[in-house]
Structures are given as structure tokens and as C-alpha cells.
Image (tube, rainbow, N blue to C red; front, side):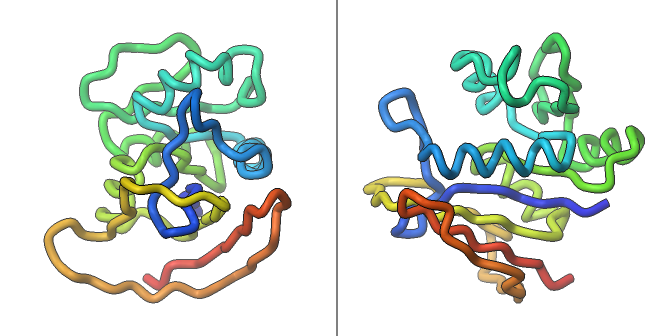
Length: 171
């Protein structure tokens, strides 16, 4: 199964943070929905999922009908979604359901968990035309300096100043 990590980055390279005061760029959000619908699933962390619920983005929204997996060690059950205790458990569940691709659209902590465990095949970064003073970074290893080669598969403007870069990770 191919695993794709999807994230929006700020123009200065931080993991872009969104909130009601700073919503995601429409072009980036529309692209996220397109990729989730194409995969038929979405893996998120508990905080991201709760944010989606709070904005009405799951029930009756663009993610209706998708296999949604919330990865959390201590989350209670959510109606209509599956809770997995680890990244690997989330991937195992989606593979058992017959999915060919898994889309990780989580927060920085969960993205870093997937990257750190070597569970990501491709990266889709949408770079938004914003600068952030304080932000999170995507890391393949929190302890050491490591490098992984990536291969640029595609890049394109999405509109509104958002540019997408699509990479494959060398394994």
C-alpha cells in the first residue's frame, strides 16, 4: 500500500498552523479534499479530528463516506471512525479494508511519527503564501541529523499563491 503524507507548509518552511482566526488557504484545503477522496480514506490525529468535528468538516462535509482513522493512544471511540493506537495499526486497518493508498493528513506530531518510523512513501507539500513566527517542523528523526533523498515527482501552482510539490521518498 502506498502511503502519502499531505501537509501545508508556510513560505518560511514551518508546518503551517490553522485555526479559526487563521483558516487554511482555500486552494490548499480543496486539494486536501481531492486527495482524500481519491484515496478513499484519511488518517488524522485526535486533535486534528476534533478540530474537523468542531468546524463541521466531517459529518455532512467533504469527508463523508471516507474511511477515517484517528490515531491516538488514549482517544475514546468516535462515531463513524476507527481509532488506531499507532501509525502501523492505522495502515494495517486500511490495508485490510482493501485500500491501495493511505492519506495522512494529520498534525505535525503524527506526521513526524509516520516519518520517523519510515512509513511514508510520498510527500505532498502545499506551500502557502504566509510567514509564521513560531511553528512546527516535519522531522524524520528527532534525535540525530539524518538525511533522506527525495525525488521530485511534480510541482504546480494551485492558485492563490499556493504551490504544490510532490515527492517520492527513497527507501
